[in-house]
Image 1 (cartoon, rainbow, N blue to C red):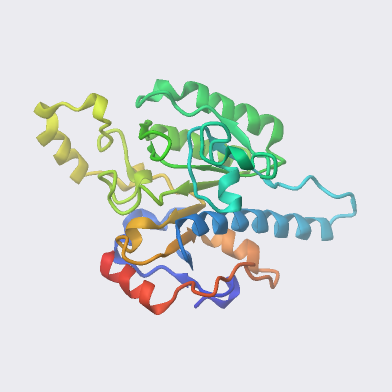
Image 2 (image 1 turned 180 degrees about the vertical axis):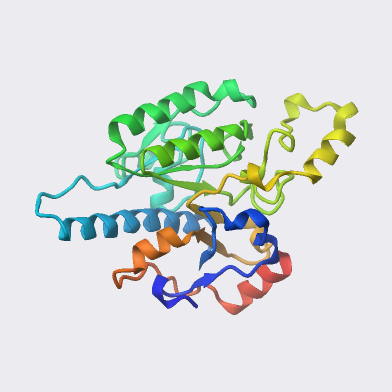
Length: 289
């Protein structure tokens, strides 16, 4: 248990996570276990908010300027996205076409951009331009970009190109904004790669471009997928296949930058459900993984 990060913050020990590229700047080695996928999104959002809250408070305490800075409290999300049914998660689901429109008047107001309109990189031009425009003008308000990498499941099985993730990662880095991947529906091999964020141009094969004659060639290329192609978020949400559907469990995985940002000044992450990391769910998850 990593007590600096708060209750149940643990070092990752799954063999599947131990790949060469995990030594990257965005290495994900801090795990916060929770009750379900939706709660893992709540945890991710709270994690991003508390990170910026702690950082901005620390900066203010060391500054002669005592005016309150604009808080980074908003999120950018894709239309047609779905991230869960709990209150925070509902706020980053599609506000019009989603299933939570009746709560629109009471949910936190977030920024939404059009989702890519096809599986190829040029289909995401408007998406990337809209994200860039918001970040240019409002990055001081934005805590994180949250998205379902490669495929929007509940939003209609809408696929988009993996290079979009690289572009969004760079935009977030350029504008000092965190990146959250919701891999609850895509994690643990559901898109053909262990995680959707690990796809590259060779491994990514949307159904609209399947070519049976190239299947053997593409399979060989997928086996040789480079670790350099992996796009790491700052925070990763997991669920569903984590336990194979046998028990309810979620996990929010992050890096030392975020965990240290929350805990270095003596703070702990402010979340602690009663049944998080219970032994039965953990045993099922270990068997499933």
